[in-house]
Each structure stands twice: as structure tokens, then as C-alpha cells.
Amino acid sequence: MTRTLVVKVTCAEDAPERASQAFTVAASAAAAGAQVSLWLTGEASWWAVPGRGADLGLEHATPVEDLLGVVLATGTVTLCTQCAARRGIGEADVREGVRVAGAATFAEEVLAEGAQALVY
Image (cartoon, rainbow, N blue to C red; front, top):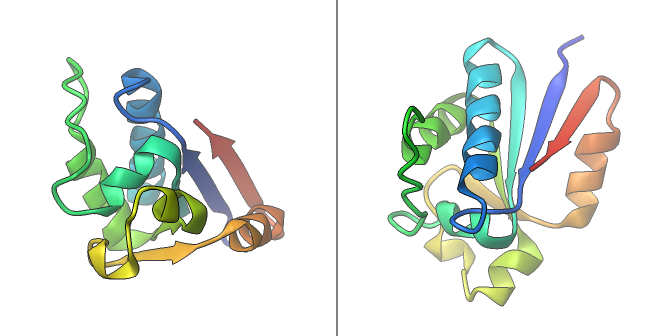
């Protein structure tokens, strides 16, 4: 059975180290062969839109755009429906490979057998 890592990132410039950790863990797990589902919520929602995610500018940290690319290439990236609506982000605005889904889908993923969830 393949285990799934569900990572939910809720922050961006408001908590740059925490945001960077979320993307680093998701990309590292994906690169190691794990099935990864990355959820963009709150201020992290902006990374679903090309060119809109914050450059966190952290020393010794891989840029979020690079980490997001790893997850997009091998896993699933989801933008929270309500978070998107609050920010005026439509499905036509998101980068290729990002889906828009809500809490029921998140709960389904987290409750699936063999899933592990992390929230940042």
C-alpha cells in the first residue's frame, strides 16, 4: 500500500519559515517517492496563481516556486474553494495542474487508509 502525505499550508509572508517548511516537506516527500497531496489555504492560496506567490527570501531555503514544481510534477496540488473565493481567484486563474476543491475532499484524503496529514 502506498502511503499518502497530505500537507496543508495556511501561511505565506505572515509566517515565512513555517510556509517554507511546508513546501520543503512536501517536495522532499514527493522526491523520495511518496504520494503527496499539497493543499494551499489562507494566504498560501496565492501560490496557486502563476506569479502571485510570495518570494519568502529565506536564507538557506529553496525558493517555493522550485518546491511547488516538484510537487506539481509528481503529486497533487489543491487550492481551497473557500480561500479562492475570498481572494477572487477563479479556476481559470490557477496554474496548470492545480485543482480547486473543498473541505469534504480534504477530509476524504486525510481519513483515507494509510494517509498522514501535516498542517503548517
